[in-house]
Amino acid sequence: MYVNDDPFRLDGKVAVVTGGGRGIGMMIARGLLRAGATVYLSSRKAAELDAAVAELSAEGPVRAIPADVGTADGIATLTAELSNRVDAIHALFNNAGATWGAPFAEFPESGFDKVFSVNVNGVFLLTQALVPLLTAGAHDKDPARVINTGSIDGLRAPMPGMNNFSYSASKAAVHMLTRHLAGELAPRILVNAIAPGLFESKMTATLLTGGAEAIGAQLPLGRIGRPQDIAGIAVFLASSASAYITGAVIPVDGGLSTTR
Image 1 (cartoon, helix red, strand yellow):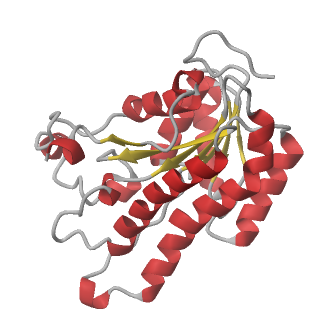
Image 2 (image 1 turned 90 degrees about the vertical axis):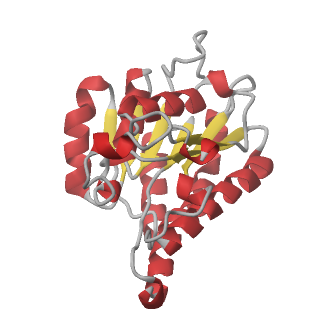
Image 3 (image 1 turned 30 degrees about the vertical axis):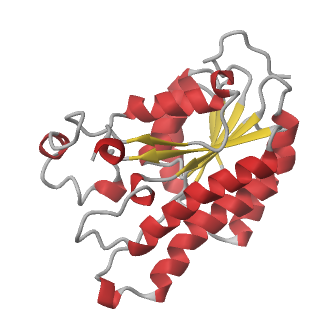
């Protein structure tokens, strides 16, 4: 049983991070490892996962399970592998995400099917599949956690020219799904969401072509997000420090969605 007197430590906890091979997933994983957790990373690309494990292994125990959570087979694979390796999960980070960009008049149905299959269906179905392991990881004073990655694009409309129609719609759905699941799974499992703003990742590379400093200077806090900004909120939501919070969608965006 997990027991720790320091509310911000994760020693003895097992965390799963989907989309963990790069970007925000790696930022989350690094923070969890430094706080003492054992971390299982998952994504579609095995080579990417292997590189992530090699980079993160100095921080703590980290393992990889390749799986595509946008498909039923991928969810079954990940669930089976985790069930074979651990008796309990204390935190599930539903971070895997997909996006699609095309002008409004040309935006295809497949751009909605692909994005929603990962960003919404995958969040729900993987959570559903892992409830037994999460319940096993729940403690009366420290429930198990599900933390979903939303987006500020699900909190307010993207800027004109940002032709990511299915992405913004899917992230708004993630925020509502978070609230709905929080009511369904309480009190043994807490469900919250992180809504990141602008961080360096493959998904934001086009937005940052003008330079991270120049783009960041236009934001309320004068910079884009740093890895520790994501790591900090991830550790908080996985730790006993957040044991009285569920159904929250927390923007981590330098004030963009809250002040403008």
